[in-house]
Image (cartoon, rainbow, N blue to C red; front, side, top):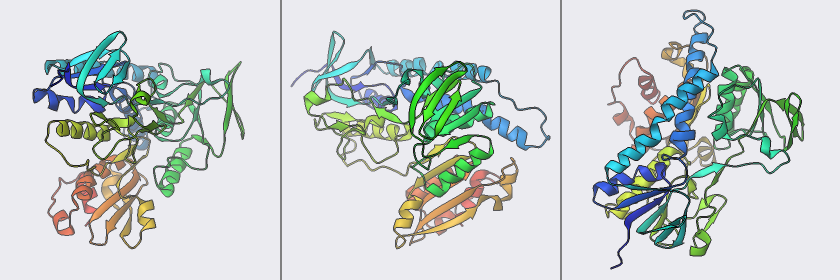
Length: 444
């Protein structure tokens, strides 16, 4: 029997790795990470965690201003202080994660790992071997290939921006583009969003994504649709973004045109591991074309949302599979997803578009969330919820736009995942008054 340095070696130390690794270490397996940037990966360092810390100030401002003087104050956001608070909190994560792993006996190697063969990884002039390898290298921001691309900033840059600009152009209207626009608008920045098509957030039903854009427009954000970005030039006043529909000036230009899987320089081609611009191809067990090499998280080519909870679920699935605790194909649960703008947009389960395409399988119930008095407590003014049921009256999907959409979808997830019947739902006596009480009440 071949003796390897490790039982399991992870390329990457983000959620696709560190959420499953403890299960292996606690079972007595020798485990190691290879990480070329920061322990924790994108989410803790320059992704979701950083974003929600910064966005908290926006939520506070919204409620204060909506109170119409009940709570006095301007609600102006000091972006520099907001960013300093973010950096203080975020700085905790890498050492905390690494320390927790090392207490379990997990080893860290720092540098760019490359597959030499099915069981060998090189890190510079160092070589380590493992019985199983898990590729969890995540993604990075896509960059437009246009003249002046050197003047563009990505989300990683933005999430360390100490001084808010006066004017900002954001190219792209996905999650990152709209969340950034919402935060900067609240911080008093004049924001223009450039869309290459006529709609934002293609992952969501267009009626809802259009409603979100309209809400953001009311707040003062400018949207330029069906516009191709051609170049960025440095000018006396800052930068000029030239597009097919006109030129837009800004002090800060952000490229939010998507994210690209980190597959370069991993040695995948030499091992015959299939991948393309959407990520690494895996089977129903998250195995690549080389059976002892798995892939998890955002680097995987899949039709599931590329989110932290998805990476966590996959990481834990692979760990259980390697421990012999789960020999079945991966069975994804309902996964909720939220756009952290003001208002929020969130969904889970069967989508409205899927329901519309299969009217023989699904029924849709529409709800005006303002029919619930509790929404008025913290000054909500508008919102909408669509509930998708199968023909047996099980809730199978939901989408909401409101100030608390993420909380509503979270509250409904158990009903979606476990197919509660109306009788079972009536047994849920939730705390009153709360937003969760309202969520369950909408189902009955």
